[in-house]
Image 1 (cartoon, rainbow, N blue to C red):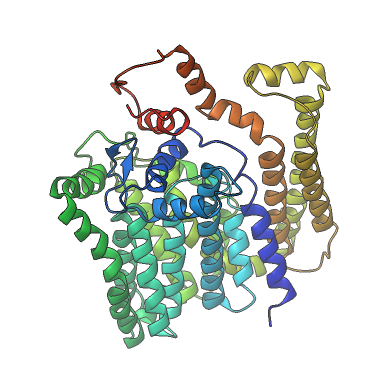
Image 2 (cartoon, rainbow, N blue to C red; image 1 turned 60 degrees about the horizontal axis):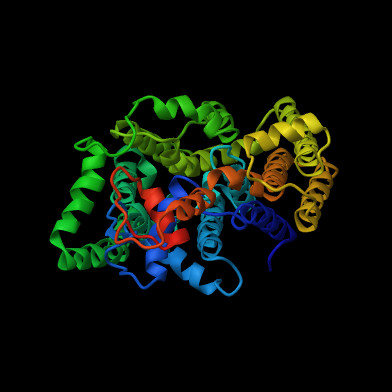
Amino acid sequence: MISHRIVLVALLCLAWILPGLIGHDPWKPDEAYSFGVVYEIVQGGSWVVPHLAGEPFMEKPPLFYLSAAASAWLFSPLLPLHDGARLASGFYMALTFVFCGLAGRELYGKNFGAVSALLLLGCLGLVVRSHQLITDVALLAGFAAAFYGLALGLRRPALGGFWLGTGVGAGFMAKGLIAPGMLGIVAFAAPLLFRAWRTRSHLLSLAIAAVVALPWLLIWPLALYQSSPPLFDEWLWVNNLGRFIGANDLGPPADSAHYLHILPWYGFPALPIALWTLWDARATGYAKPGIQLPLLGFAVILGVLSAASDARELYALPLLVPLALLATPAVNTLRRGAANAWLWFSAMGFTFFVIVAWFYWVALELGIPERLHLHLHTIQPGYPPGFKLLPFALGVAYTLAWIAIVAGPKRNPQRPVFVWAGGMTAVWGLIAILFVGWVDAGKSYRSMIGSMQQAMPAQYRCVSSRNLGEPQRAMLHYFAGVIT
C-alpha cells in the first residue's frame, strides 16, 4: 500500500516538474537546436541519422530526440509541437526522481527514499536546466538509474545489474560515451577501493549489466556505420572523443576548476549537508556503502568533467545525483540548531521571494507601480501586458500550498528538507507560471524570424547559411519553413 508520505512527495515532485514545460517557444540557444532535430524526426526524418534543418547533426545519439518526437506527436492534438516535445523532459525528470529515491531507500532504509528525491529537487543548479528541451535531462535519468542499480546490486545482483545496464545504455544513447565512461569507472573502482564491493554479487551484477547494456551500445552505432561510415566517424571521433580531448574547436574553452567554482551554488543545499555526512561519519568510519558509493561517484564525475577540454554548468547535472545521495543520511543527524536554522531560513527566504514574485507580477501585468512597469517592458518590449485568469489562479494555488507547507507540523527531523523543497517548488512555479510569457518575448526567435520573413522577397531560389548558427537554422525551418 502506498503511504500518505509517498503520495505527498510525488505530488510535490509533480508540482515542481510541470511549470515551465509548456507555454513558450523553444528558447535560445540549447532548446532551439534540440527542437530542430526533433522537428526533423516529426516530419519523417531518419532515426539513425539525426538531421537539423536538412543537414546531418551528429553531435549526440537520438534517444532524447526520438522520445521528444514521440511526445510531440502524441500531444499534437492538444499542444504545439514544441510544447509536446518538451513534456519528454518532464518524463525523464520524473524517472530521475524515482530512481534517486529508490537509490536512497536502498542505501539508507525505507524512510530515506523521499529525502534523497527532495534533496535532488532542491538543488539550485537543477531547476532551470531540467525544464528545458535538452538531451542532458535524459542523461541525468540514466545516471540515476545506474546509481540505483549499483546500490541494489549488492543485495539483488540480477535486478541491480539490469538497472545499471539500463542506466548506462540510456545515458549512452542520450549523450554518447560520457555515461559509460564515468559509470564504468565507478563500477570497476568500487571493488578495488572498498571491501563491501568485493563480492560475487557485485561481480554478477556487473556481468548482467554488461549484457543488458550491450544492445544500447551496439544497435544504433552499427546502424549509423552501415548508413554512413563518414558520419559515424564524425559522431565518434569529432563529437565524442575529439570534443573531450580538445582535438577540435567545438564547445567553450575549459577551466579545470570550473566545476569547483560553481558547486557552492549549483549543489546548494545538498553540498553542505553532504559535507556534514562526511564529518559526522568520521567517528564510525566510512566503510558503509551509503557513503562509499555516492562519494566515489561524485569524485569520478567531478574528475572526468574537470579533465574535459570544454566546460559548461549544464554538464554538471550528473554530479547532483551522488551529491543528493551523500547528503541523505545527514538530514536525520543534523544538530538541532542547524536544522532549525535551515528550517527558518527556508520559510523566511522563500516567503520573501513569493512576495517579490507577486509584487513584480502586479507591476508587469497591472502597471502598479508605473515606474517598475515601464522598466520591465523596456527590458522586453514585445510582451503584451494584461490580467490573465489561468496564470493568476495557478499562482494563487501555488502560494496557498506554500502557506500550508510552512504552517504544517513542526516536529520532524526531515521537515527542513521538505520545507526547502516546497519553497523551491513554490518560487519556481510562480516564476514559470506568471512570467513565462515575458521571458519568452526575449528568448524566442519567433519575432525575429517573422520580421525577416517580411523583408524577404516573395520568390527566391535559396537562402545561404553562411555564419548561421544551428539554433537559428532550426528555428528558420520551424517558424518559416526555410531550409538554408
